[in-house]
Length: 164
Image 1 (cartoon, rainbow, N blue to C red):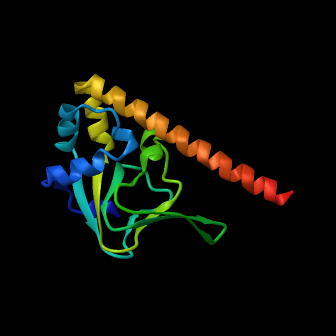
Image 2 (tube, one colour):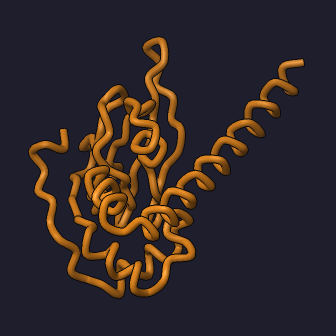
């Protein structure tokens, strides 16, 4: 999948920082921390209908949609379940990176798509070299995962209420 992709450094600082400022896992970072993070990020492109990753793959990156759209879907008992469509500024792959678990869904580019990627290796390098930035990111990631879990619980409860 992504092994054959070309990962390039980001060049358009202002555009990317505008996107990063809207993403909850980067909330509360100082300008210096955002610039330091920016230098660690890379960009990768996918063509329409190209898989970003497959359900069951081991995670390597946190992905941010720079342009285009990505559909997350799950295959369950030979049935395809569309989970969500993500567009510019949306972030995915976070839980898999932190949980060190296989991707629970597949990601497909719905059109030509450019993704900003933040590697697990880079996150671990921050742990070694910038504990403050690492701590803020991990706290933000934990908050985001909790929000998503709460949202999933609400959907499940509504579904169960409808079944009664």
